[in-house]
Image 1 (cartoon, one colour):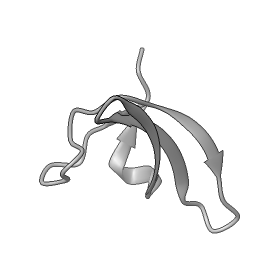
Image 2 (cartoon, helix red, strand yellow; image 1 turned 90 degrees about the vertical axis):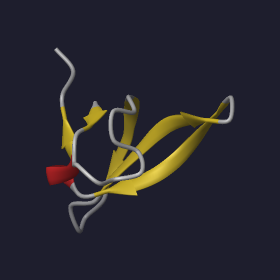
Image 3 (cartoon, helix red, strand yellow; image 1 turned 180 degrees about the vertical axis):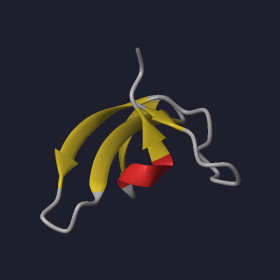
Image 4 (cartoon, one colour; image 1 turned 135 degrees about the vertical axis):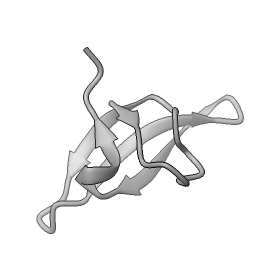
Length: 50
């Protein structure tokens, strides 16, 4: 997945979806400072990588 929402501090970051919560939030792992870190997003902030 790719963070595509303009103005988001993680815009253009790629990551791996780890979980989709019951409320529809997406927990994704993105690389920050050399480590994979879990970050919560709304699904509209993300797009699939083709």
